[in-house]
Length: 65
Image (cartoon, helix red, strand yellow):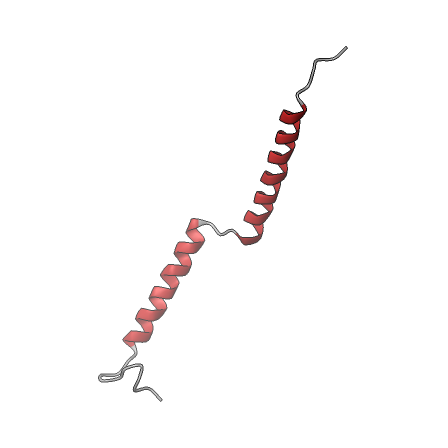
């Protein structure tokens, strides 16, 4: 005869594995690393600086055609 098995522990372990698999799938689908987020932020800031650097004196966003 085998050892008694707790069905609730088995059920909970199975649910944890399923949740972990879903989380891993979502991380691949939607997740970005911290380095990727930082790179996008730095690129946006540089773009804004470059755009501001090309403005003429007295040129404001409301004055542009």
